[in-house]
Image 1 (cartoon, one colour):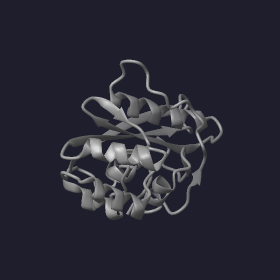
Image 2 (cartoon, rainbow, N blue to C red):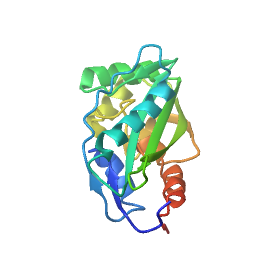
Image 3 (tube, one colour):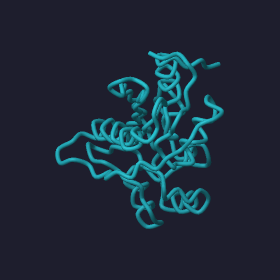
Image 4 (cartoon, rainbow, N blue to C red):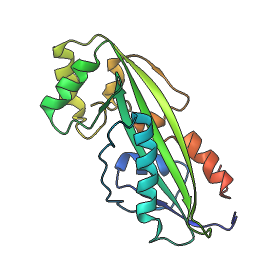
Length: 198
């Protein structure tokens, strides 16, 4: 692998992922992948996250030669079913009430593509975080949604803000994964591809 410093490209326009990446990579570009994110029939949620992370990276890789391209995706799973981004207040309320007193798995995948290699070598990693929700009342859910307005988040909460009050506990090997980009795994992959990190 080429150890010469190369540009890093985040195949995402998510401000959450960009804020996380900035913790470890001071300079990088972002590019919208523009792919169809629909799940494939019969596909498990974790497999969907891994596939979409790879497809996002590949969608922009051809535009950035000799770069390290990062694709990422997160899929929330409740009882084997995918929980998408709510998009509005009513769906967010329904989603949180459905999660009340239950365990939701968040599969956060990333794909690192080396466009400087002859075959655009790629590696995929995935982190699964389990969130145990408290028994929530409708009033608690309404108060929370008014504070954070997490309508663009899978699971309808922001753990980095007031959303943490909704949980009994969080079971995770990487606290950044739940926000949208598993930095521990990403650091490991970036080092393997020749980058020097703190």
